[in-house]
Length: 125
Image 1 (tube, rainbow, N blue to C red):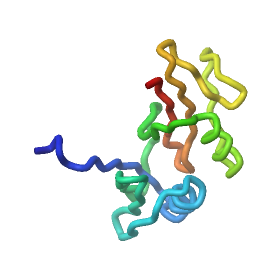
Image 2: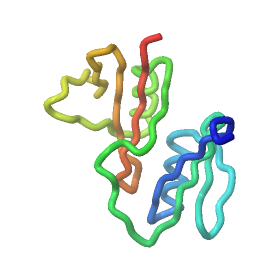
Image 3: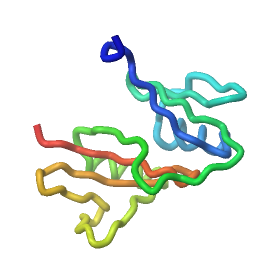
């Protein structure tokens, strides 16, 4: 059944070398493979295929996110590695760029080198 299958994410890129440097070097994801069609990395048990395209227009919404336990420390660590977190007026975001949703979830957004919107989120138990 599909509900028992592993989920795989897909992200587009026009520069696989730059994408690998970002996803492996900056975000710390594990390199799996690289072929003519995609670069593959792994985040815990999830494989992410970074599809090699000649061109594309990045979506204006989050295409992939990570659920983390301590968002502020994750944001600080990524900021220290050169990641810039996005500001979205009129949302009220912390100094680190973290927004607290009405239900208590905390979210922070950033872009990869191709302009794909990614996020970190921390959710109440």
